[in-house]
Length: 160
Image (cartoon, rainbow, N blue to C red; front, side):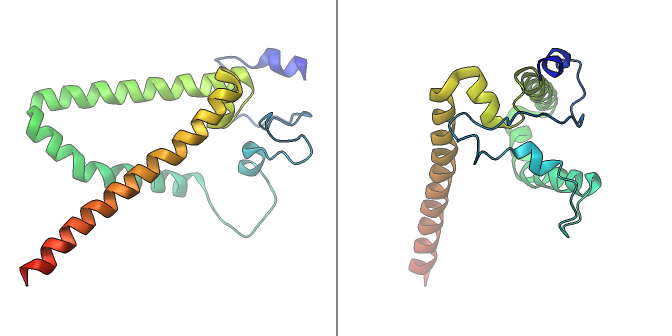
């Protein structure tokens, strides 16, 4: 295991399939019942689900385009065309760079999930904070969604 960790650095391949003898799950879970996300992702058993890199890429691009179709024209309207293009390029660069940093951190720390990287960087308090924030953010978004729909439905029903 120690020899494998010496070989992991920022130049390691992202999707390199390595086998590790040690379980890499969160230290919060017990070693016997720990579940490693990476094992599920690279499991070579045929489970009947057929997925491939092109389909995964299609779904990823579809989710990006779906939200961009709504937000980008409004942002360009407010910022102007040239400044909007400039901001789009800057945000794309920052996003790409942060993804590269996250992948490198995963390889260096030996953790291959977002939660594992957070735990490796900030310990158990960071892991718990991430869990709380991953619940709170969607909860707030869902609450706002319901509030907007309630407001729209009320106005629609009052119009009749």
